[in-house]
Image (cartoon, rainbow over all chains, first blue to last red; front, side, top):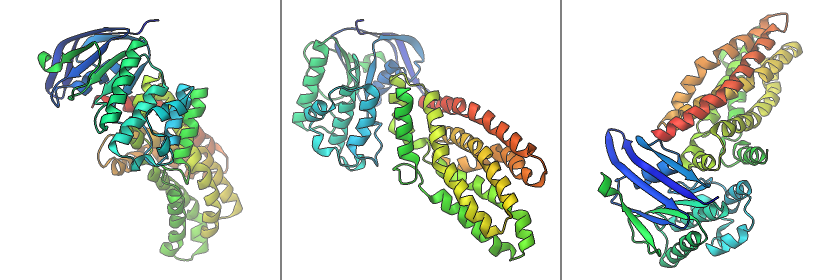
Length: 192
Length: 219
């Protein structure tokens, strides 16, 4: 089955504020979307709505295909060594080549280090490793470039491009420029 | 089943004494400390201690069950573990059933073992000790279930731990009444009623805790 993502006429309310409304987003296999906007306009909320973790104030979201989400929350136990913490998700997702993914994101030297000692960028790479091991067709990336050095940023861009080439969907929320071939940009500010 | 076992292994690794996320042997030491302090407070009257000691063990067990609640759910909630599980199609209910089992395994067996030295400190007779042990065996699953539901409800609140303690106490009163009440009854009806309450709580608590996790997402 082809991956597909249709968000129809979404409105998002947080507290008393309506963050955005009448936002429609349709992605088919191979699409990459850059969700842009200033801090607090609702980029993360949009991703959580698409992921089904937050109910939209109005509108519907239809997706076909498993969803992988990378946001600022690692879902790795801070007191465990990285290898063990990642291992749980790799086991749950039935990852076939965890070593290759660790090598790709250059975290194999960090596997013995407790997660709480990792730097921001290292944590981000760990979260990306968790994303890769789940082989989901739909990627939702919330600020994936934050804290990464230039080389790692290039790696992320390559990974997203490869993912879309092989028929995946990527929705990337970022206030930074991210260079992806054939990206559409959705500016949330336009829907406020 | 594969998911169930993977979750159980992770939760046990977190919660068992020596694990990275639980409160270790602290509840146990707290429990023994209460049993040790009680004779100091009421004096060395052996008859009084033997008569009231069973109830003291029950109260100590209930209070010790509150200690691990602070990090029982909140750590994983903050870290987004339940979000990631949700995306993989693992329901909050399943995650909470597993957490309930792991939570009980992490504190109850050790508590039962510690009841023996506590009973010796209070000078309980062998017969009374046996009733206390049976009652705790029947009642601790219920205490764990109440703790799980309350832990999940208060997980997203600041200062949730203190509130959790206060919320557990009224919910645990039925267990305490029948469990400790078994000490003054000649038959086993108290233990059976404790078991019944425990089973009902174990059935309801994962549902309540899962609903609390979903509600925490919207806040």
